[in-house]
Image 1 (cartoon, one colour):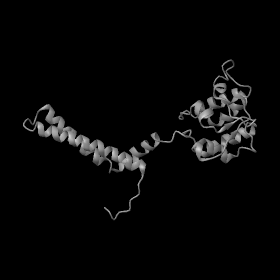
Image 2 (cartoon, rainbow, N blue to C red; image 1 turned 30 degrees about the horizontal axis):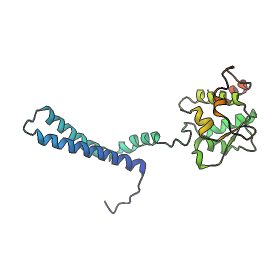
Image 3 (cartoon, rainbow, N blue to C red; image 1 turned 120 degrees about the horizontal axis):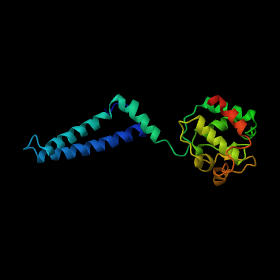
Image 4 (cartoon, rainbow, N blue to C red; image 1 turned 135 degrees about the vertical axis):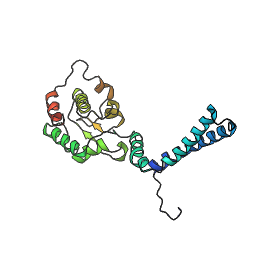
Length: 207
């Protein structure tokens, strides 16, 4: 064992240690239940102790199966994704196409926001780069852009507060950040913005 190369992968080893801890606790509890009621082999507490002990063994052995790495670990990684990014399910090619569509309708300041900036802001951790998305959208249009994004990519759990406030990646045409409360209430009186038709056209290829 000590001659084998070892690389610590927190997404594998930490869950494995948790399973070991639970397994050992179950084995410890089950073992003493079995000892205390060993004179009654069909009693409830004896059978419960056996079940706990065997469950503990199962928990410790499960971590070495291929299924643990192929199925369970990817699910853990998905749940433990950093909250410092949008955590959205969208490909780089889809974002690139969305960017091209927005440029076509003059909704992005191309001199300040490149395609790489656009993709980076959506997919990478917010603090890992200095890129910003400079939009030529007023508050109502920005809110509608967000709503259309959610509608056309429904598997995402993108929150408006992250999109506008927490990420700090969006900028208005004057270079200032959008105000969350203003954008949130932007479509209260009118359900659509002045650029609604253009925004619908931008997202049409994804619907």
